[in-house]
Image 1 (tube, helix red, strand yellow):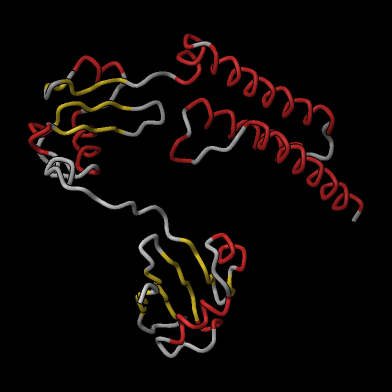
Image 2 (cartoon, helix red, strand yellow):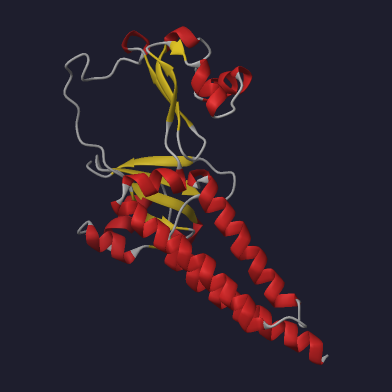
Length: 237
C-alpha cells in the first residue's frame, strides 16, 4: 500500500510539472507539430512516466530532466523567433517539390519522399493531374501546400467583378439547451427576443434545442435534440 501511495504521489508531482512546462512551451495542434516538437514531446512524456512509476529512482532527478528538456525547447523556440538560421536548424524549412508545373526530383530525394507519396499527398489536396499544379511545397510539419495554375482555380466573385456582402462568423445563442446570455448581450438582444424567434417554429422550450446560431445576415439556425429537423428562422421579418 505504501508503494502504491508513493507512485500516486510521484505521478501527481510529475503530472503538474509536465502540465506547467507544456503550457510554457506553447499550444500547437498535432497536425502542425514539427519533428523537433514531436521528439521533445515524446521525450518529456517518457521522462515523466518513468519518474512516476520507478519508485527506486530519484524523483528530483527525473523532474530535473523534464525541466532541462522543456527549458531547452523554450529557449530554442525563443531564439528561433528572432534568428532565421536557428529556426531553420531546429524546425527545418519548406521544400518546393513542384515549381512552374515541373517536379523537382532532386528536392524529393533530399527529403526522402517518393513520387508515389507525392501523388498521394496531391490527391489529398483534390489534385489528380500534376499538369494543373503551378507550385507545391512540403512544409516543416510534413504537410503539402499546393497552388494550382490560374486557369485551374475556381472562379471567385472578384474574378467576375461581383460585389459581396460581409459574412463573418455565426454567433452561438443556444448550446446544448443552454442560452448563451453573454452572446445575446454582445448582439444587443434579449432572452425574450430569442424565445419569440423560437416561437415562430412552435419551439417553446430552449432545452429542446441542441444548437442555435445566428449569422450576420440575421438568419437563425436551430437544430433540435434527437433526429428532428432543423430550422432556418429569418429574424429580420
